[in-house]
Length: 205
Figure 1: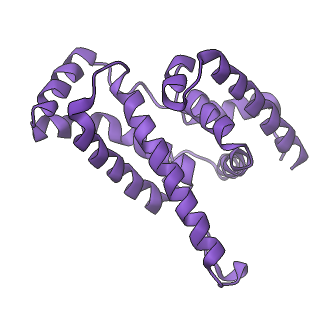
Figure 2: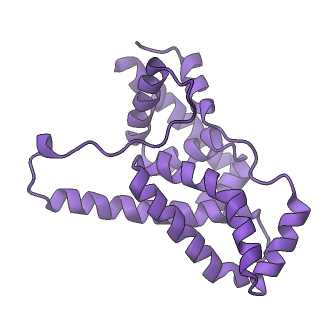
Figure 3: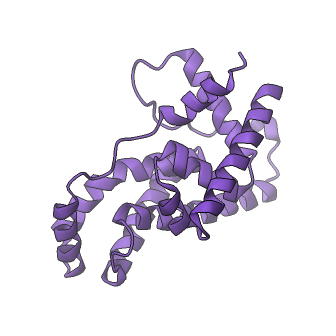
């Protein structure tokens, strides 16, 4: 089934999670405590952000095992770098930046392993899917979501990152710019370009 652009927009928004932490004042207290070495405070921060960060890693890598490892590594890196976190952006934005860099590294490493492999393509098992978003997901929607992931994989990396962070993670253009570099206007251009490319690909499939 070929979805209309409206349906494609629905798919892009379907997985958008709720805001990571509505208790920003409490989060700021936990950050300060964690920076002073309080592991319990850092554990609280992890619990507030791990679901969204894991979902992002899973959407980027399309492999649950890799996503879990990268998400764990991201929090390890965050703990190590937390004393230098100055709060110039939201903690969630900073965590996305760490996770995105690790996802890029993992994807490159995985691609290199695949190129070096001599196993025939038909003998390679399909990568594990990300966990389902809910028990009511129909087979038809699951098929459309899988098609969406294939379409996203066709996009240039910078455009794909902007679209995923904005449309699927719900970040503002300013937050995307903090993660990816450049201006909010440049991010807006990347998102527009990514949507147009994705729509053309979608209609041709």
